[in-house]
Length: 77
Image (cartoon, rainbow, N blue to C red; front, side, top):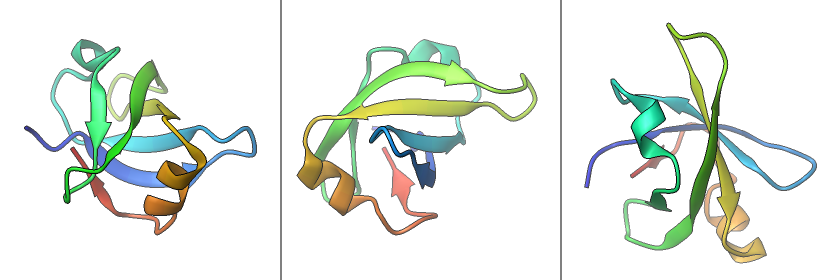
């Protein structure tokens, strides 16, 4: 497991936006995302933003997953 990013926001549509902390975020597409307690959060569906500081878009696996990450700045694996 490696650190993927930090939670920046949860959109109105229910997607989770992470500030990428990985060198090659494009290689994370379709990766399963978990929190530090190994609770499944969702799946990476897109990488957006500038190349220098990209953001990772995660589709949550459930509404419970959104509640797990509602505290901004939480590290995600």
